[in-house]
Structure formats: C-alpha cells, structure tokens
Image (tube, rainbow, N blue to C red; front, side, top):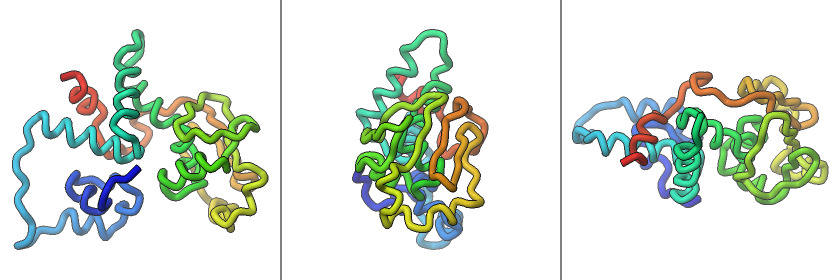
Length: 202
C-alpha cells in the first residue's frame, strides 16, 4: 500500500499511525511549538470524522475499498455492536495477527510475509494477508521459511515478548493461537471508532 511520506502523513493526522513514527522523536516534534508551527484550523465535525477514518485506515494499512467493505459488514449485520465487529474484523486479519505476535515489526512487513507464503494457518500455507482468522486457529512460520534471513535471530528477540492477551504465542516455535476475541479497551487506540462509523453513516 503506497501511502506517501509516512512522517508527514502522521504529523498531519496528529497521531503516530505508522510504526516508524512511534518514537520519542515524533512525539517531541508533534508537541513542539515555535515560529515555524502553523496554527491548525478548527476542524468541522465532518473533518474530524474524516481524520479519524484516515487514522484507522493507515494504522491497518488498508485501501479505501477494503476499509469500506469492513464498514459495510459491521453496519449491516443485525444483533452486533458495529464498533466491536469492525475492530474484531481488522484485528483478526492474518497480517495483523502476524504483527501482533511479533513475527514482523510492522504491519507492512507482516503483509509481505503473509503474501509470500511464509505463514501457515492450521498447518496450511495461506497467502492472503486479509485472511480472516477465528478463535482456535493456529498460526506459525512455515518450516521451510524459518531459515530465511527475515526470521534470523527472531527466537532470541521474542524471548521476552508478550503479545495481546487474546493471542497465545510460543517464541521457541514461532507459532501462536487465537484464544479469544479482541476487545476494545484492552489497549489505547490511535483512532476513535465511533467517529469512523459516523463518517460512513452520512
């Protein structure tokens, strides 16, 4: 997904939506004032909702069409809370789980590892980054890929890594399992899902 200069985009949105901008340096530059700092115009409600939508889309690295499909699914199904379903759908993507387990340091790399066939689900190679996982699914680095340079030294690096609570991960075997559904509130989000849904309800 080509997004342009990540640092500039993150600064415009006012949030570190890319992994490379989640640094003290970015936080300092975002909060720093000075003569060169332009005063932001007051955003309209529509503008604020649009910004929240862009934040969420960039965090998960989704094209507009993909994201719209997730929105349509979350808002059309009866008996569910749209914000919960939307959050679960994007979190349960294969590329996101690979990132959450620490097998890739960015979602972009996780997407690449998935599409190149380095990841298996329940013992079968899956090459679709958007593949929807469910509770009980087992994810692992394919045996034939463990010697690849991209995974070099990963076992040691992940020894003290703790993934999200709903994913069980074994760094020794580079494998994990989805053990529960992701819930909003378990971590601080960089976007407001309610505003995102409001944007698409117009």
